[in-house]
Image 1 (cartoon, one colour):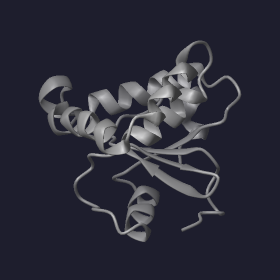
Image 2 (cartoon, helix red, strand yellow):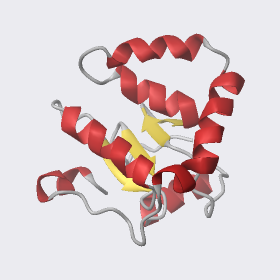
Image 3 (spheres, rainbow, N blue to C red):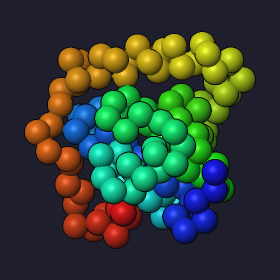
Length: 136
């Protein structure tokens, strides 16, 4: 399903997860060309996209990228974001050649344990003032 009304390169993330918020901050600090926009999966836009895609709207175990009207999730989304980062990060794109079932098995292990390993916030992470325009 296409999302033409949404900005391109929209990252949906678990706003309560320390690991996920850290990943968003990592992208924000390196996104010098302002390619990416962000929205928490728990928010109105995240919920709408999950519903439209027929995805679970209460278990936020996926990192999602809406890019060029396409919906990517889990390891594919993370690797596509890495490909857009400066420096050596795009080299991680080579892992897109690994079958998704294998990549997502690793991703799912981290996702299942992320709160235990990295912690969970009581409320969604609030970005720095200079980043707020990048959030929907």
